[in-house]
Image (cartoon, rainbow, N blue to C red; front, side, top):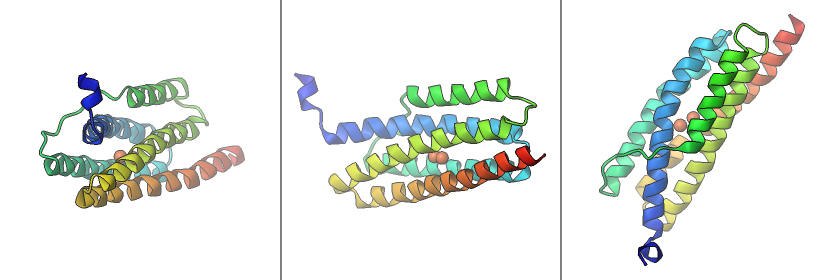
Length: 165
Ligand SMILES: [Fe+2]
Ligand SMILES: [Fe+2]
């Protein structure tokens, strides 16, 4: 019976908790990836996005406030898996010419997950009449897309550079 009473508000809150947990894991992941990166460009990209991610966590906390709920994470298994794969690549390709390409591919999988999640949250926020929340989430979505585009560019360079070396 209880299940039938769940609403889009519940789903929104649930997904908000999922993304909140994911972003906090990404903060730690980006710190590790920045340390592993072998070029300044890639390290800078990870460090810049780490700072942005800090703000993204704060934006999510603002959205929790808007819905009158305590900011709280709910373990995001998808992100745990993506971060775990990233760690494996860091270990297995450490010191190899393919390390940066591997780091970028892991990071892009993470960005794509985020882009999917924020797109959904924005859609639902609009449906629920939460214009201010939608606007905040949109700011984050733009950062995720911008990061993904930068990583695509660096991916091309990483491969060319190593092939030429
Ligand atoms: Fe993010
Ligand atoms: Fe991101």
